[in-house]
Image (cartoon, rainbow, N blue to C red; front, side):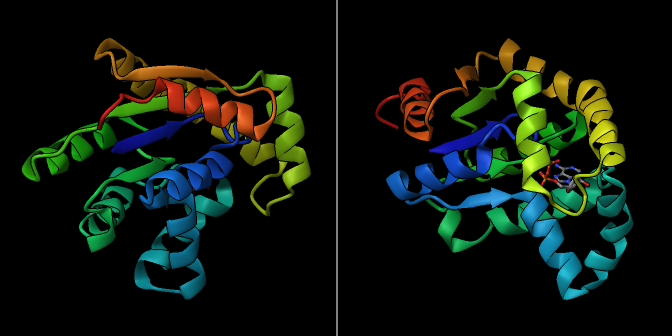
Length: 185
Ligand code: ADP
């Protein structure tokens, strides 16, 4: 099962990815985590992406796509994967499609976890991550609207998008996610 989790910061993607991992045993690949890890390790990629992360700006497509494709080649992605935070732009959608096609794979479902804006803002505020200040939150919102909304539309057009209500307990939300996934895959 190849799943893309979609939703704004604070929508609960990380929690639900963990639930999916427990249920299906497929790895959770969060591009934000991969990028922060590279930055903390001080690799050359990490040094290259640091200014973007600190400013809350999107990392150039080629860099993030390279990182994701490398990860998808790992043995543990054989039976499937949960992508979180990727693809976030149309060129990233294209890069993913091409890479999966080469492997004879496809995206099974794109799950959009929908949470009202005022709740998202409260959740992000209480998270307190270093790049969660007001300026970067605003910046990320602009990018989301301009670059990521079209990604959502594209998957909707291809009937791959499921919109799930992100309010309620984590168990309730997880139940809705499971119900939205294709059966027998
Ligand atoms: P959030 O959902 O709060 O934006 P993430 O952990 O998903 O947090 O991402 C943190 C940062 O990592 C982003 O602000 C951006 O700089 C970078 N990033 C993550 N995923 C991508 C991506 N697919 N394309 C470009 N940049 C990305």
